[in-house]
Length: 374
Length: 226
Image 1 (cartoon, chains in turn green, purple):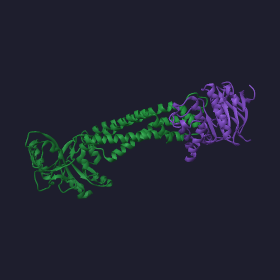
Image 2 (cartoon, helix red, strand yellow):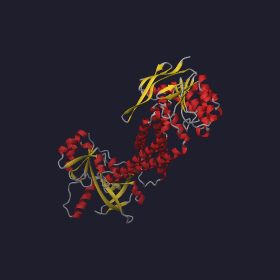
Image 3 (tube, one colour):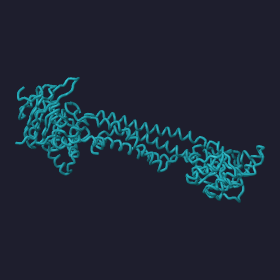
Image 4 (spheres, chains in turn cyan, orange):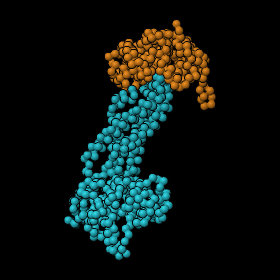
């Protein structure tokens, strides 16, 4: 304590330089982490928001909601096993709509849910979904940026069906496209339309993409056994199978890991060089009777002071940054993520100082005798 | 007069390329309270080894080192570190002060390491700085001090823990004649005042007049004559 603080006070320039590097690296770590989180949420918000624990998908759908197709019977069977109140059908379809007022086109994801079920989203404006209101949908409030209002009519490009915007929801998206929620009647008529469009025999029975399940892990096996040609996957598996999700998160994750390693090495080199420079000084201190543990603590404390103070500055900077950022940029840095990131940063810094600690421990007090220069 | 430092038949051998080299051979020495002993000898005669063993930095191959009548043999590294902290003071060549500590902090560091009572430590720091005549420089960093001033601070630092024995390793090596005399007379005076024993390794003839005894290290033994 005594030595660590006084040395930093004495060699201000040296420690300021290294702290600056640390601040820059920590800022980048926090920023990329926030971006990764923001993108992850933006990509999969609707699925993440769902209260489901598992999803039942068709067997060869490779965990992709959009590829899977299940029918009413499978839904009913699933309901028998986990309880009818714990299973909800879900329809997912990526499509393109254009507001009737102009000719602009918007990619959206249609999510068909049971208005009374637990997949129905909370609205921020307008009125909720209901079985009675045919042709009325809820849309994500990002659509209001392109001029969509309550009462705007959206025309589906594929089927030509028209929906009226009856309410807004917040933070609902799938594969980076805003979500549009519709009830099961509209989902069915969409299927009938599309089938007719494509010349298939008309779909009398509604089909879904997935069944959302709320259940404990032990029921999953039973469910899997009972439903043939299906696969029961965890919610997180469904999320990472969203197109682009894994790739996006993977590359950002790689950047974060590299930054952590870089910061550890920068600190390691800095402290190693400083320690080498001070070899005779440590020898003197040991000869005077300073314990190795005391000197090691002193080095560790300097690392802690550097990493924690640069983290504090970085967190403030990033928060400032967050205020200035445009709201369209997906950036999300929750308290837990922030805490975990900061903690990993400190741990990596300490790991970086291990090399110096090892060096300090090996310095012999004997070096102090017969030396001419400090 | 009691002997604060006693070396009994110290032998130290080194393994050197398959052959055994005896650096110290049955060396014995007694240093009384208040006595300053100078040890001279050509380079390679084993002065550093002698100082390291007497100063609890190195274990002898055989023989005993007694501080205040108590043997320091067979102790662990940590215990020896503790002995150096409480019983021994070192003055190194060219002072070797810690560059980032102010003069008074150089002394306070010893108090901190020895977990001395803070008020008592502060009082002792003031006393010692007074004695070496550097009270006005107590807020200065070592880089601002002259060579002689630095060595005086080193003396005060070595005395801070009120040691039984003071070891000085060529304390005048980097000083001119006048400063060298200054420094050694200060060591001699402080040793008398504090009632410590002191051993100074030197090859500076000019300061021998200030020492109570002069010994020559030759063939692993200490002799009265060169």
